[in-house]
Image (cartoon, rainbow over all chains, first blue to last red; front, side):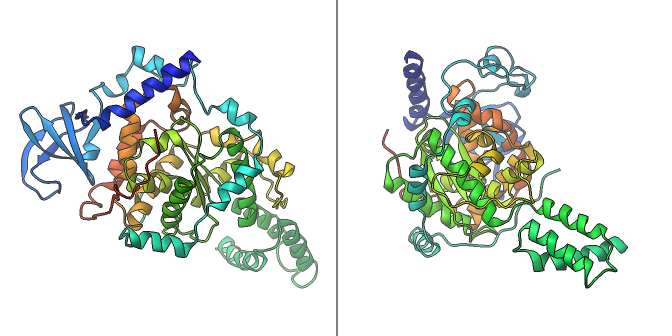
Length: 165
Length: 286
C-alpha cells in the first residue's frame, strides 16, 4: 500500500516535471552539427561532440531546439538521448541493479510494485463484457477519413524502411 | 528448376484451396492424387502441408485467436471508462491502420486501466495501450506512432509466428470461434490467460515494428517523430521504475531502439512535414 503510494508519487513527479517547463537535460550520442534552423541544409553553427551535455528547450519534428554552453540552435533529435550522460552500456552499479538488470543486460529479480506483470497476465481470465465494450468503440473507415480530414491529415505514399545493416 | 516448377503448380493449387481448411485441402489433394493426376509426385501432399503450416492460420482463425487474447488481457486490466477517449484512439488507430497493407482487418483499439507503461497487440487487429503510456503522450502524432508500432506487430503476424514456432497452433486444426465466453480450444493454444503478451518477441520484430510505426504515421499525414519522441521519454524517465519493468523485459532498451531507428530513418524524413495535432489531442484527467 505504502509502496504503491510512493510509486505513484514518484511517477507523478517524473511526469509533471517536463510539464513545468523546465528544460530537460540531454546528451549527444554522436558528433553532430548544431544548426541555425531545424533542417539539414540550414547554416551550421558549430559541431558538438558525442558525450556533450545539452539542455532541450523544445521539439519540432525530428529536431530539438537546444542550448549547449553559450550556444543555442537546432540538433537532430536522434543524435540526442534525454537524461544525463551515462557511459552507454557501462551503466553499472546501483542504477542497473535497481532496474532489475545486471550489467550483462540479463533480467534479474526485481522488487516492488510492478502492476501489469506476467503473473497477473497469466492468471487473467476472459472478460467477455469488456471485450464487447472494446469492440463497440470501433470506427468505420468512412468515419476515420472524416476524422483525418478534420485534422487536415493527408494520406501520402511512403515506402517501408529497409532494415539497417 | 524442377523444384521451382513444383512450387508454381503448388501455389496454384493452394490459391484454389485457400478457403478450405487444411483437412479439406489434404483430403481433396489426396482425392486428386488418387484420381485425375496420378503422375504427380506423392511427396506433393506432404509439401502442401508444409506450406500450409508455414502460411499459418487463416484470417478468421487469426481474429479468433486475437479475440481470446484480448478478452484475457481485458480480464487483467479493463478499459478506462471514458467513452470519448476510447472513441478517439479508435479514430486515430483506424486511420493509421488504413495506411497499412491490411486496412480491412476489423481493427480495435483501447486504453486499459493500468499505470504501467506498455502497449499490446493481439492477432487480427487488436491494439491496447495502458493509461500509464497514454499519459506520456503529448500529441496525436505520438499516439499515431505508438499505435503504428503495434499495428506493425499485427500486420507482420509477429505473435502468430511465435505461436507457430512453439507449435501451439496446429495448422491442421480449425479454430473458429465467435463464442461470447471465449473458447477452450483456442485458450489451450495460447497458454495461460494473456501470458502471450507478456512473452517477448525477438528484438528484430520490435525493431521492425518501430520502422513500420514511423512509416504508417508518416503515410497518415503525421509527424514521423512521434514514436521516437515517446521512446526518448521512456528511456529517460523510467530506468528503475516498476511500472515499466515488463516493457523493458519484453523489448530492447529504448536507447537501442532509437539507435536502430536513427540508422533506418537516416535523412529520409528531412523534407517530410507532418501534423502533430497537439490541440486536438485528447488529454486524460490526472
